[in-house]
Amino acid sequence: MPKPDELIVAIAARVESGQSNQMSLTVVTGGAVITGRLAPEAMWRQRVSEVLKDSADLGEFSAVFDAPAKRNGPPTHLHFHVARILQGAMGIPETGGMYRVAIEDVSAWSMGDLSYSDH
Image (cartoon, rainbow, N blue to C red; front, side):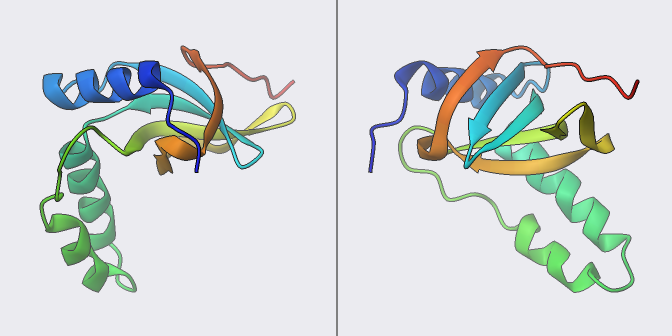
């Protein structure tokens, strides 16, 4: 298991400590390119829980995300919201989604949101 990049861990820690959701990041993980804004884990969990509660079929799973995160040490995951997986010239989903990525699985990253074009 590779050692996670110290810079990306520091960025994740800063997002967690500041409770900010304004940091844009693009990562490559498992061959996928994900671009979007980072959110603190608690904020991300709350939003996922809200979305699940509104679903007739998935409402029962919202409680999983209501539980507080168990944290010891530096962040181990990036929590993206308003994020897209870039596929060719498209971003999936167009409106942005919620993604959780293990920092140790990030093979490359860049500051900022990569834009895409539907044209």
